[in-house]
Every structure is written in C-alpha cells, then in structure tokens.
Length: 335
Length: 220
Image (cartoon, rainbow over all chains, first blue to last red; front, side, top):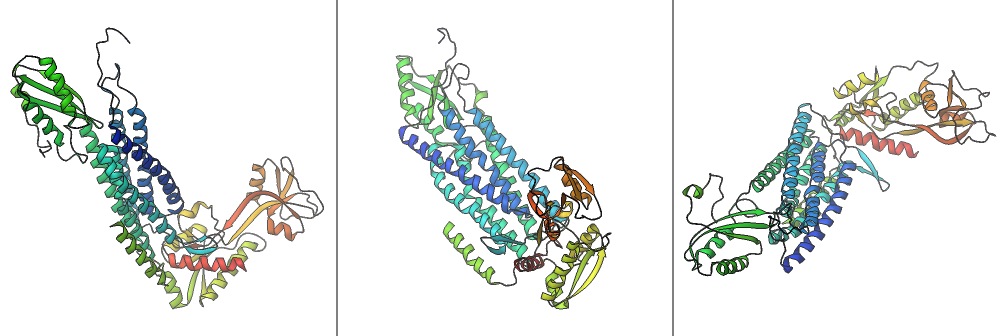
C-alpha cells in the first residue's frame, strides 16, 4: 500500500446481518429462477411452431433470464471492495448492464411488434395439428397452452416470493425481476387466448395476441430504460419504482438541522446500488470541538438507515444561491 | 388472486374439450367437404417414368380411402408441386398430394401433415452376401439421381440405370423396393424420406382430420 496514496475510497459495503440472510434467500430464489427459466425456454421453443404469440412469449422469457443472471453476477462484485483505482466501488457496472438489458428488451419489443404486424397484414395463418404424446394423438394447441401455463404460474409464485426481499434489500435489479415475473401471467394469458382463438378458426387471434404482448414488452423496456438512465445520471435517491424521493433524504437533512453546532445545512445524495452517498454542506454555528462533533454526527446519522454508508461533511461559509435550484419538472416530489 | 385465475382457466378448458368442433378451420374447409360431399384433390402430373412410381400410387390410394371415410367423391385437379400449394392457399383445393416431403423447401408455403410414411433409402446386397460396414469406394447401382447424390455423399460410386438387375452386386434405393427384390438391406441409412400431404394453412380442423386418418392408416 503506497504511503502517500492521495485517494481514499468509499467504505466497503456491508449489509446488516439480518439483510445478509435476506440476500442469501434472494440468491437461492434467483438460482431457482434461472433453472426454471431454462426449462421454460426449452419447452416453449419445442412447442411454439407457427404461433406468433408463442414466439413473442418465448423471446420475452428468454430475455427475462438476464435480470436473474445480472443479480447473481452482482453478488460476486459485492465482495469486491472499492480501491484506489475505483474509489467509488463497482456498482456502476450493474447500472450499465441493467441499461443494456433494458435496451435489449425495448429492441426486442419493437422487432416483435413489427414482425407481428407483418404477419397480420400478410394474413399468415397458424397451422396447429396433432401431436403424438404418450401414445395418443392430441391437438398441439393443448400442449402449447400447457407450456404457457408452465411459463406463467411458477413465475408468478417466484415473483411474489422475491418482491418483499427486493424491497428489504432496496435492490432495483431484484425488484424489476420480481415485478416482471409477477406480471408474466399477462403474456401467457394473451398467448393462450391467441391459441384458443386459432382453435375457434380466428386465424388473426394469434398475431393480435402477439401484438399485445410486444406492446407490453415495449412498455416494460421503456420503463426499465428510463430507470437505468436516471440511475446513471445520479438522480437523488428514490423508491424502487423511481417515483418518489426516498424518505431518508428528508430524514438526514432533519437530523443535521437539529444539531446544536449546525447553523444551516444542505445535503446532496445519490445512489450507487443500494448504498446512498451523502455530502452534507454545513454552515457551522461554532467551531469548538468541530472534529469530534462531525465524527459523532456521521456515526449517529448512519444509524438512521443501513443504506447510509458513506457520509461526508463539508464545512462551508455560505450556500451559493445558484446551487439551490429546485430542478426540472422531472424532479420527484417530496414524499 | 392467482388461485382464482388458475381456477378460471382450469374451468374453461374442459368446456372447450367437450366441444367436438374444436379446433375449427379458418375458412370452414372440412365443413364444406362434408356438406358438399366432395373433396378437391390437387395432384401433380403423371411422373415421367414407364409406370407410375409406387409412392405415387400409394398416395392416390390414401386419398381415395380418406375421401371414402368422409363419404365424399374426389375431384382431381392437376398441377405442379408449387402451383398446387398456391391453389390450396387460395382455397381452390382442399388437399394436395404429389411427393411432398417433410424437409421440402416448400414447407413454409402450406401446412404439411405429419408424415404418412417413412421410407428409408439404404443399400441392398444379395441374400447370401455379408452386409458392408462402409460403402466408401464401392460401385452402387441406383435408379434415380437423388439416390445417386446420397450415395456420392458417402464417398461411394453411383451408377444410374433404368432398373436394378440381379447381376448388380450393390444397389441403393428405398428399403421396401430392395426387399421386394429379395435383397438383404443394410443398417446404413442414406436418407429418410418422410412423405406428407399438404392442406391449406390455417385449416386446422381439416389438418387434424387428415392426421387422425393417417394415424389409423399407419397402424393397419
């Protein structure tokens, strides 16, 4: 270690013990999810044949492997401490991966919409015949419906199990993953309706269902892309849905205002993964024992929330009016 | 919430299963056949061979039996493999036959049934000869160019003749034909011909009906 290293990195991230257990649980669920999704994509690929809706559902399911994979890779990086080369740590890698995944989803949705519309315009009719299963001949449509149910029901259950874990860990990747899986029933349901429609002779039902599914994929992709971009441009910490300012922002500000040695205070916060970086700009009321006061304050404020991992106090003479702009209409409202 | 949705779906399905009229045709082809009691069959023009090939005759027999099962008379319409598929999709034809195979490049143009027969193209030798392990370098007599190509791909030397005679030591062709010549057939598969029947795309009731018929026909 160089003696005159000018750089100081942020503290290594550590989850409180209760949450470490939650993280282990979440990891287990994500491994189960990956195994399950591999089975789903295989089965769907074998059964999809000429159904446009099933093709859409299959592609969506294949891409949904990404958040689970990202989460597990991120876990490896959790153990890597920040260093002189990367003093802020490695979390941004996930934000980028998340953004690429969101982009892939959006691109996929757009392609599928185009493909489905073309199928509809060209009046392509899905052909679904018999299949020999365990010795008897049944209509392939039933097999497709069974595959779609398999792609939806366990996903919904897994999503429900992961949601509370994601909220406790304040983990956006896990949250997005859980949220999408819970909504998986919509895609499968649309595809099932499409297959049944074809069974009733409505050849367009399949392509129409595929259009519906692609639109929902596009919506999902846009929402995720927006979230990823906001994260990358250091938006003030928000709730998991990126809708409202996280309450901890106001809490930290209130804490410092109450300190007797503080005349006035402004803060600046951003997220890096689940960790919030805080810079506290204080106009001190008095300078006696200021080092001890600030050190104590940092220790105490961190107890408000485990996510307050890095708090830096900056003593200033005054606040610049210019720096107190309230931002654009896109600023999340105070909760 | 989830349980209610699952229950709903599970309740719906038996309802549909009880509908004997499921799946249905997009253009009601099967119903039309049944109500008019006639089935329009597309067939490729007579093949340029001294006599119609065995598979050609078999396909015609198959269709005749299918029509009989539906209590319909057949109307034969001639054309080429591609023109017949065009007519199918324009709903000017109900089914089409003429050597369509499962791996045909035309398979995206129509709905092919499951194969009604599988024909193994293999090597045939004299009844008392040992079967060759490999055919590389051997001279093998064939009666058509496609089989010649399969033979060449295994690095053997094909010779095309009008028919396979008893003096030809090694011959290649459909397993059935080789056995009919009292030859022993090898385990080596040069190619598997899976023959299918074509129906219009989207006519799933007709497709299912034909496939059910094929399944029964095969088991006979």
